[in-house]
Length: 230
Image 1 (cartoon, rainbow, N blue to C red):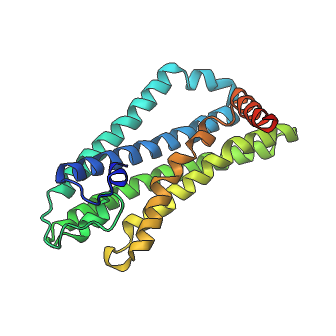
Image 2 (spheres, helix red, strand yellow):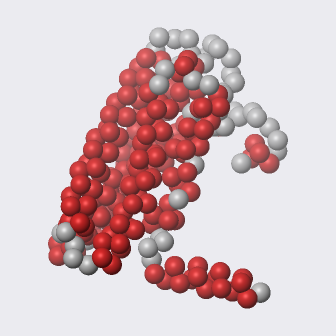
Image 3 (cartoon, one colour):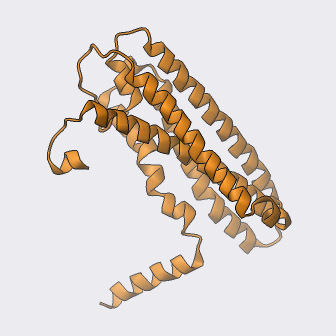
């Protein structure tokens, strides 16, 4: 944002390191929260009578702490390893932020394979979370399809489908961006992928987290009605 306001494309080394850390931290935390949300929906729909017991305030606090902790340690690991690489192919990052695959393109040391291995491990962990989400939704959809009420099925689908769509968008673009060979990609493709997995999921978080809230829906409707009468 600062670069856009001051019309500059430069960033300091420490600023780049901060971007790498914060980006990996928030991406990891975001996907951890998406995984927890799948579990929340599974309990709410498949085991509603046990919801208060399994997802009380203590359990929610523990899961939130686990999500932030995983994101933090993952970010420390990747930032320390990436920024320790010697850069000998210039200092121009072909991205709108300091992204790890773009930094690896600037390294001419074989040590970059270590970071590639770390990225592959992180993607494998994300894939495990994705598998958990998919298994949760298999159980959720089986339970929803057995509901006798059409209104109940509609409510369940409207709650789950936006979350599921974001999960698919997030993990598919992130895996493609981080596991494809760095030399086999164009700058425009890298930019599109980065926007898809770094900008779009957070932008639609209000839909996932809040739009099912009836009070918020009523407030949005009243706001539109107000502007229509002006």
